[in-house]
Image (cartoon, rainbow, N blue to C red):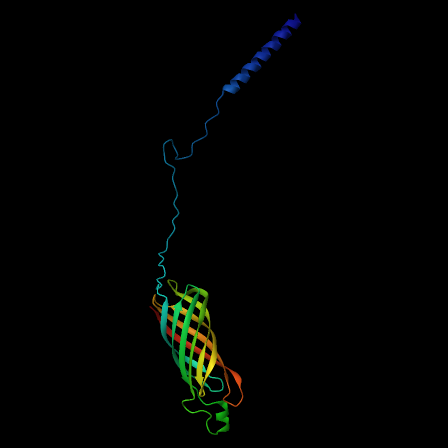
Length: 227
């Protein structure tokens, strides 16, 4: 009798365990809570950043390749003081990096150190003291950039290197001359530029009775126009 009761109780426990298992499988998961303000059919809100945009004016650079203008500055003729020099330049811009140029200049050399110290007769006549040169060469725009004036205006600029060859008439003779230099070009307008140049004109000279290499340093300011 006791065995039958135990079998019945065990059977009832197994039936109840099976029913509870079936109920758990049929149960549906609870729905996830909806975000606030995002009901069905509503468009999600897009947050746009408040960015203050600047008005940028692109550089207006003349597309012409020719450039020409006048120069003025000072020329230190070795052994013959520092004097004012006048000249002109013309350039053709091959591309953004390279250009070809021609320059001419003229100055009147002063007294040499020997003439000042000796107090004797001058070594050169007035016409022989005239220092006239021309040079043809090439330039390389090594450091293009900008120069800022205040916080709203920028001027296009370029640092360039030049190398050329030509001739110098001085002390009654024409002398083959090598010219090397560097300069800064600033575009003031789309057609107008300002140059600051430093050059060394190197040639042989024998005015004082001994042949030597003469270095004649020049600093000029130029105003050129594109056409």
